[in-house]
Image 1 (cartoon, helix red, strand yellow):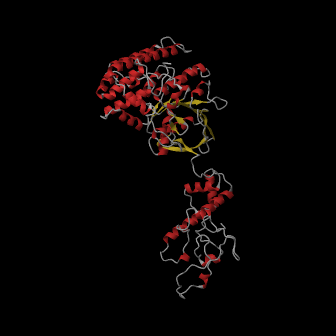
Image 2 (cartoon, rainbow, N blue to C red; image 1 turned 45 degrees about the vertical axis):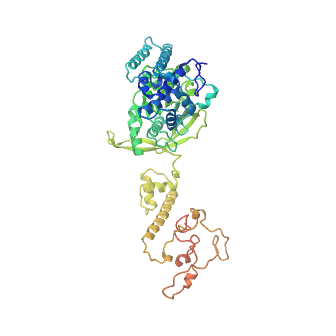
Length: 590
């Protein structure tokens, strides 16, 4: 069981082994930070076999560089600030590491750690050579590139430069007691994407997969919420292996729609073959950059020549994707096409087992105005699958860009249909009201002019629906005009001549919407919903008689605000002020 790695401290053998040597290096430097420069000339953080040691070492060197103490307490506080104390083994393990001073000679133990790291790198080199040489399409001499790259990196290290070998992380075996210390999945985009995972978006060709992915990348790079879903901000690297020429227009449309540059997103406009030697260069570059998400668009374009119906060959490609994930702890997001039949990713099923998440994207509709893009969460390993997400498309005209015939250059962006509040169904009177208001059509227009306006824009609606939309607009316009008139009235206007509105000080918020009419049973001589008759409110003496007139004594009160109605208005059969009716804002019969 010597190859089993533990995430929590365990009793070490009496003869110091690799774990003890690593602890002696770190503990000795925590005790005497003046030894850190000499140790840094020997090894680097990736030389530690245990991930917890690399975390602690990173913090120790950071504190020393900034002139801060390197005591166990200082290291513990910095790890807690970075939210990595649990991954480092907890407070008890930090104290245990600090207690290893290695006889006060951390440089000696650093040489031992470096030697072990070199042996692991050589073992990894051998594995890669065997894997390349036994591949179905192996060519003599191809594996030599791995040896050349390894020797070059070792030469750079020996010369003291910053080149660091791209050591692959070894698979970790854990005992049962260590499982509780395994880090949980860290969300990247809501419950859809997580850090340190493989994920995939699949769908038929031309069904907006790349538009969805660019939208995801833009929100992760800038840190904005993705249509209501929480986003953890981080750098995104986008391999545009397919459709590179159209990526600029999509990005510019996104930037115009959201009113800000797409910061935090880097594009590589060419494919890098997963089974070629350049993939190791990509892994090394990404390890240094440490992005939060790496997009590969598409899976097929970075695995040219691979028989995608072969589980063996596709399994090698997925393993190379996993190498990229392990080196960066990023979310590696693949874009892949579905087959001609069904909703499954094209090719062998070897890929799906390695995925943490898989989403299926499809569209319905024939133009940007009526297309609906649906994202189905087809797989979420170890968690509940979420509900489908739906998006509409918004056409965006790019500023200052035109086609050869003079037409403007356009692209589209996604707009969530799930997050859009109170959107009227297309073709309803309410929808037409919004269209008319958006285009600032005069509210005085009657049916003939509105019907002609609809015809010119290709809007097909029945005449009765158009007339209903006109009535809605005119009612709304009448109420808004009364509100404007009320604001312009002289301050001493008698109250019974003012347009009345519900008072702000009576009852709780929302009371008038919930109780637009009194629920007191009808009284003799009154209509349904009328409350009991009340004495008229005290009024100022009239100019003629100095007292309360007969008309004012008999004037009924508004059933909403309990203040007297205008006598002429009341005599015409109205029981509320014009502005008091919360349902219509005008005559109740309307």
